[in-house]
Length: 371
Image (tube, rainbow, N blue to C red):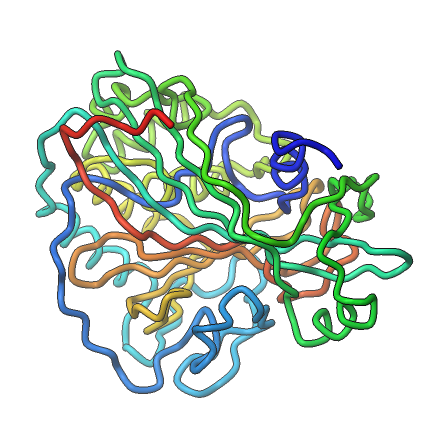
């Protein structure tokens, strides 16, 4: 049996390709001041990023379509209808501009550390004996970022276990004898899975690690304070780092901007004013669509938008976001296959790749955990 660090590396290597900056921990949600307990009203028949009534089985359900106002909606092809209206009556640009207005009033808090606590999930192809099937690997993450850049970045993580991704996968797992250990391999460029590392499907221990203060391939925490709060200036600042894309990043400049700007909304802790600029920048780019009222994987409702990106490495992937309409903060996101190719060649359109939800976000003077 391999030791725990090897198991964690196997799970990290097996994550379906997504738009995380290479070599950096995923930071799925924005962070300014700690949010209050805002009251959210559930609307009837809200579109769901998971099926209604399946909240307790969030890690088991891998649906192939979003349900909007009771009707199925498959992932849209690239470049589809940014002006299409949904059941809420908002186009994607209108939704994004409304989120910008709310974000611009989100005042930053004070404190030495940005703290971000999330739940993350990746759907992996695993094996046991001659059988292969897909399982959702869930984990929790708590990231402490030094605002000055002078202190260490602490990452508190815990694997929460693997569960079959769909009823069919559950049947396959049971037919294989319900093994407590499965083989997890790295996705290969042709969609096959590489040699597997044995991984237990139960929850693992909580660990604390230290890394540098970078939150993106080209951004450190102090850099975030310097990002411009005007959309055109932000566009220019981001494009200084565009090197043609490649790998799991798009080579098209507008698609690259969509991915990086959406990271400022959902993955990188920035001020409310910079987040507002990112929303306004995204609203000017082609290819976004509104999803209407949606729910994250914990059942919290908000306004949803999506866009599709394509690369030879991953095929076409649709990224879907749910935004708290009252604050302009992201509640959750997920990635799904649209057109399989490369590492997703063996998957089907609509297959879930990854998801994340925010559990807590705050600024604090507290001391980060050491162990």
